[in-house]
Length: 168
Image 1: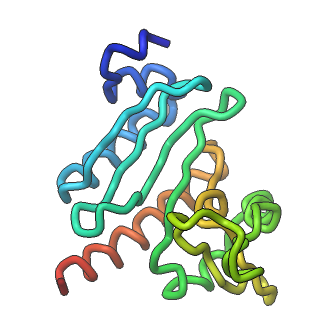
Image 2: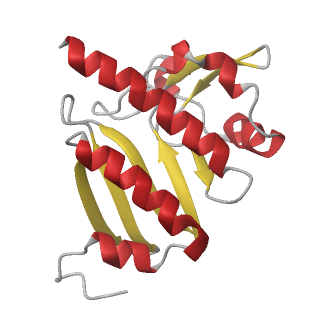
């Protein structure tokens, strides 16, 4: 990884991305940049982090980062209630990751997080109710099994955000 004094670029991030995921990532990046999403690349201890924020709300939509040598896709599903049923169709390994993610202390206990924390998700998955942390719930490694699901989640949320932004 390069010196943190040098502003990290998308190309820096992309250099660490597995070859088979690069065209997919380039496509998602183009979709977001064409819609005016703000791209930010940061150098972290574990590698580069790539983040996209909504032009309308300024809130994060998507983060890509490295954990334990894996490329991780973290999406913020502000419109989850409109496609909750889709979650039940995810591969079992991805469902297990959602189930094991941290609970949202604000939803479950009425407090306990910082004042700046945005509440997490309250949703149903395979007949079970979950109250999960916004910052870890929909965080998956990018691999052959997850790519179709990640693409679908990305497209569903982006479509809902486009409609919401057009209505503002």
